[in-house]
Length: 472
Ligand code: FAD
Ligand code: NAD
Image (cartoon, rainbow, N blue to C red; front, side):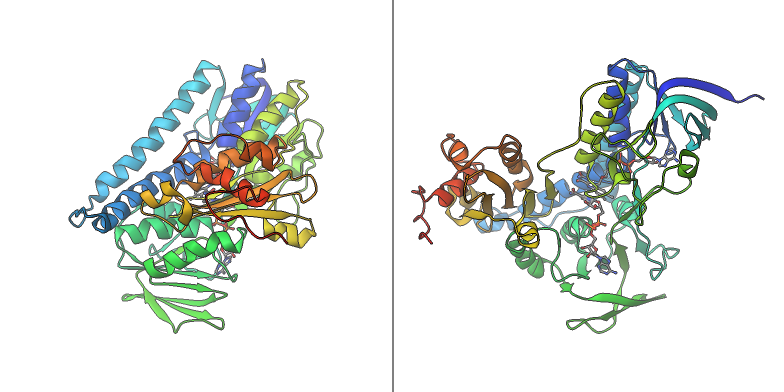
């Protein structure tokens, strides 16, 4: 039987947030587009095994936690009864609502979705193998194949008790004890979920701080609270050996503060992700991945090949859905002749822990490493009426600014809803706002969003809710 031939202006390889955004935008700009995806459903890691299922579970964890703490305010709830099938059902329903929606949007735009694994055979042809086997002829291509879990060989992944983030999100059971290897964002979000469900969670992190890219002052309140909530957090410690037995997984550690070998029911390995650059036929495009496997691109997201673009996790850090989406739009607009470029002043990061940690633009860590002059204004949420009304006082909002121009360079928040509150800081950085732009904007009272203006007032010395910081 002769193979199906598909001819399009643009082929997009990979149907995650980067890929489907690029395909939809290119179609809206008049291109004929095919989108190749091997998992049989659109949405990529983010919708199917990342952002969305994790946030669905985090929401349930939040309910359990708040109900458990309500007795502080004179309200008593009983011990929660967990129906794991019901919990998984909620998560799966959210995911399927969103992925089905993407299928419908692709249809409406006449984007041809080809289910199968794609490999470039030349700079104008791609072979698809699977349900929709075909040879695709294209004028330009956008590579959006994303990333996969980094599986360190030391961990026996063939033992079902050793999990990656996708396994953990399946929530097969609530184990009695769990070691999370890697205290990055995935590790700490999963610690939040499993500890709320009743698992005794320990975290081991190689670096001297959990969530290492965030500033220490933002992470401290979280670390303080999680040291109580979790069984243990071991920083500057690494795992040296895992010995599976019927009784559990015996883990040995190394480092100044390393514990004795300990038995766990389950291990979650969350030590990062690697780009999916292998087996996609990059060699047939004349493109070379860098030493870490990422595809180098220019600000228009063009690779070293004239008609080939790359977006999302495959192009490097930060591996975030919103970065992939924006890159996808840029690539689609550039190939459609629009003057687009990916040159953001800030890409926000949020850890959806409790409290949340959120930062954008310049961090203090980065400023110190690059010798960038900055000053900061910090507003402690212990002085926020709204935060105290919510029964929380551990939050903080800080704004980093240029000492000369007072222009806002970055911001960081720890606290409930910090991820939502960060939006104003993103806009401030992108719009080139200075401290006065923020402090003279009237913020509703009592809101947590006020804390951003109050941090600017702290920096200016105009604050009245607290004593202004002493000059110098
Ligand atoms: P992906 O989403 O990885 O999609 C790539 C797609 O390409 C996949 O569906 C894959 O099947 C397909 N593919 C690969 N090779 C081929 C091939 N040869 N042929 C056909 N198809 C192929 N980011 C956030 O911003 N916020 C969050 O809250 C967040 N939470 C996360 C939680 C977890 C547990 C994880 C693992 C990640 C999370 N992320 C989050 C990261 C986010 O999921 C990724 O940054 C995002 O999905 C990257 O999008 P992408 O389009 O580059 O690639
Ligand atoms: P990560 O790189 O964010 O964190 C991995 C952590 O593991 C790091 O802190 C690292 O120091 C540590 N580590 C590495 N090797 C170790 C070892 N041998 N022993 C102990 N610790 C070790 O990676 P991740 O948490 O796996 O997440 C992967 C990607 O997914 C990230 O790029 C992240 O941005 C993205 N993600 C984002 C969100 C969000 O935006 N809320 C949520 C989940 C994942």
